[in-house]
Amino acid sequence: MKILVCISHVPDTTAKINFTAGGAALDPNGVQFVINPYDEFGLTKALHLKEKHGGQVTVITFGDATVEATLRKALAIGADDAVRLDGVPTDPMQVAGELAAYAKDQGFDLIICGQESIDYNGGIVPGALAALMNLPFVNACIGLEVDGSNAQLLREIDGGKEQISAALPIVIGGKKGLVEESELRIPNMRGIMTARTKPLAVTPLSGSAALTAASGFTKPAAKAAVQLIDSSNLDELVRRLHEEAKVI
Ligand SMILES: Cc1cc2nc3c(=O)[nH]c(=O)nc-3n(C[C@H](O)[C@H](O)[C@H](O)COP(=O)(O)OP(=O)(O)OC[C@H]3O[C@@H](n4cnc5c(N)ncnc54)[C@H](O)[C@@H]3O)c2cc1C
Image (cartoon, rainbow, N blue to C red):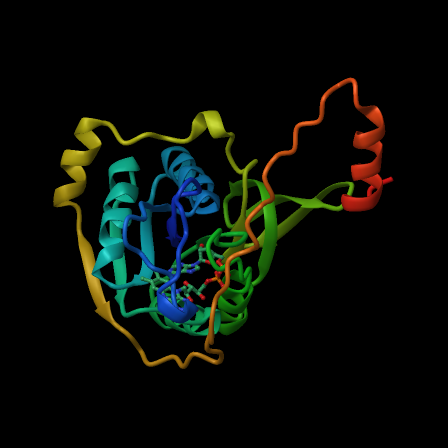
């Protein structure tokens, strides 16, 4: 079974985010980058499926050389090989186009994406990739089992769960539930050493166009400082909740 896991290289959730002068772009200085959490669930699921059914797990990222540390981490966790599509992505349709151009002739049975990336939060790449490859797509997957040439999927819907079956090949957008947090793998020393010798191919872009261009970024307004009110002064508490916070 050939599985492709699409990995987005994102700032760690605890990173302090700043933008370059004028808010033109993310300032990567001092930011620790990690595997997008949704993709980590997908990668772990892919490794479970490989252990059960045999096969190969390839990880892929569209990004410049700075994303290679993230791909090496995926290799240390257990992926067999990695591909870096060499460029700087600026738009989800461009990312989907490049992933599709790479994957179309590779015979993958399953393409696992995250439901969304936690940096730009587009939630567009997986569906667009499936459409460009003319493959079925199931988003918000919280369960996935493969039975011969069919996939049994469980997806989260508002107030419930939906069971879906589909013939492989398929593209999914996954999230927590594909595996549990306790099942995520931390690279051990052996994995880190082996990852150094696993193949990481750098592939030129096919020329997919970006259809949008971000013209600027702004941070949310800073949160107001906490106000402490003496417990004997309930009238003042009520006044502030009414006049300032406007919640009563
Ligand atoms: C080095 C670098 C520089 C960037 N610079 C800019 C910039 O200057 N301006 C700007 O607007 N954006 C920039 N981006 C972000 C880029 O535009 C996004 O990767 C793209 O728009 C998809 O983000 P999204 O939030 O729409 O993805 P979503 O659709 O939310 O992602 C869902 C899933 O798609 C897959 N996926 C997403 N992105 C990738 C990827 N790159 N490679 C492989 N799989 C992927 C993952 O499985 C992910 O979980 C940069 C990204 C990188 C890595």
